[in-house]
Amino acid sequence: MPKRIDIISDTHGWLSDALLEALEGADLIIHAGDITSEMDWEHLKTIAPIRAVLGNNDYYRDYGRDVGRILRFTYEGLRFVVAHYRSDLLLDEADVGVCGHTHRAQVLEEHGCLVVNPGSPTFPRGARGATMARMYVADGRVLSTEILDLE
Image (cartoon, rainbow, N blue to C red):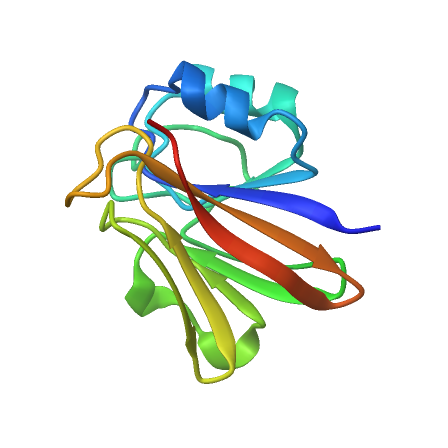
């Protein structure tokens, strides 16, 4: 059975109704940093299990000992690496790399690794507007990845 991973970044202390509605039903949430709110962190944990990293605006926040600058984990047979900055992703060690910081959504393949930047649901940059990413995985494969517009 495919698992749904919702990928967000750069929420900067505000979870919009559109974002919260979109996250309902996720099997896993990945947050690529700049959460900037312990309350938002606790709220997200009530929706689905969450894996996250610290962003450049999270330096004095406490989301627990499992949230650091770089995160590596395996989920449904896929190796993930998550970092706020794209330059910190070690793509040769992963099947999927997740980053944020730019507030601009992008999905591309690089060195055999799928790299996902979900953009920002709070303070998007560029003409696209508020975004997040959604990925379906099963049996060690990425079945689909898309950028969702939240407005």
